Image (cartoon, rainbow, N blue to C red; front, side, top):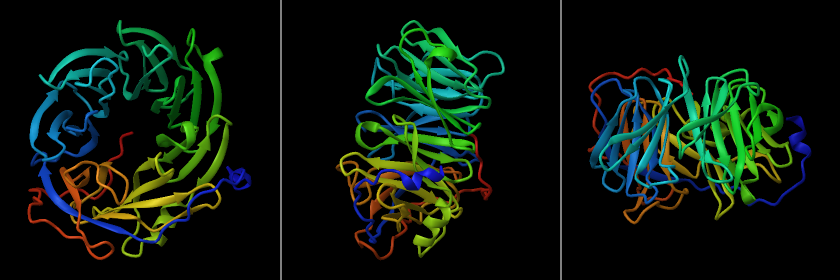
Length: 382
């Protein structure tokens, strides 16, 4: 990735130095036990959100008020991904688990409506819907990538030679329905053309070598031509998957973010956020004590991670695992809510701007205290 510094220069806005503070509006204790919040995802109409927990349960809440709606039960091991991504119905939530199953739930009745299995002793870490005919369901299953026709629920292909370790991410690329990106603990990102018969020999288009275990990937830039990558050792890189080249590498991402954050230091990264409207990109970093910062990333003309433009503090007492939010400085709905976070303290926290611009955030007395002391070590399934 050393060649990233020699790439073509593209224009990018300078990094602003202002920081928007957010305070707690409400805090929901998901269960007074040892459960973690793994992931928060919104329904397509943003009326509700689904939350996966370490108790192998998925709970649904009102996104505006935090009111409990219901829950889906059935998985027998860790839930690795949830998504309202069904091509057939906006009410269907999908989930995959280390129990080797990928399931669909009707969130009106909270009942399971179908399930497919990766086979004995298999764990499913990620899934994605796509394909040229919008009929494919791909899943990272141990070191394999499995494909089903979701309409018939029949498995149609298995790619088993491209990766040597667990496949942590699979994503059909938005706007390129037949192109699939996979990422793995083996440090490789693979691009596949899923048109026609799917096999290891003919469908593998390119391989990008990150060099270390990959945690999350996502898309950014014009026509989603670029790819961001967060690793399990907290490095960040940006790639051009179409031109098969690295754009920028931030092997020192955590220290760069920490140096720009005068009030705290970054212990880990939770996610990345890209605004297509503004063509701006943030990496979201957290502290073991439960604070969160949105750090603007410049990866084109200059390589830099700037001071946090949004800071969330005072709601969590432990590591934050998932963030559902809008763009720093904006709210994501007409209730003035900036976003929701979930973490290893079992809390769901709702965030509003405290109205002070760059001064201090505030803590609501509605924040509930956990009955048990939380571990400070980070639980890290894929």
